[in-house]
Image (cartoon, rainbow, N blue to C red; front, side, top):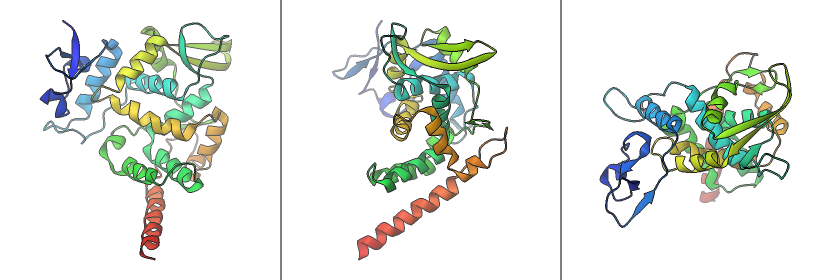
Length: 280
């Protein structure tokens, strides 16, 4: 039997979760979207987040799922696909995208995990004229909508800023043939640089995530991360993050605290300015 998600299916239309893996048995319909079977890692993560995002009475959006290695792997999957660059002829064959340094990958992971810092960067880009005023509404939703908060996971600060070891999570992607890493230096002792590649299979899995009723959030959120990161190298992204006083003043080993209150002040100032301009 083939597998589809039926756009006319009332279960899907209500936003309910299909059977494991986001796959439902084929039904006759004039509008259906065929899906490849997702890797088991992706299917399990979808189910874990569905359970974690539900309260005792079965309502969504009331409790934060516990952080897991597979959840971290899902973030890396979408980040490498969307915040990576095209491989060159000198790279291994069969690769779809590559992030050239761990500094860049750690920096964009920080923004994906911290919607308040992401919102603040959007406001800064609006003020610089790089993006339109409509992104102020996006920034406000990042602070006030429940879903970004459900996936808020603070990162500890170390010598090079926000940092969390990637090896365990990335090894899951490697196990399923979704990604591979090239390390320059002596593994386990003195690694000078690590490049993170997404395979063609990994790129396909990342695209499929957008259709998952739970994990699809990551595919949409990473678009905002890619927007603010641009083509900046990892060291430049870290420099931008260090401009945040709260980030810069965090003690080594401590979690970087939220700046949501300060971001709300910035948004309120814009709202007042817009109101004054409208009344004049």
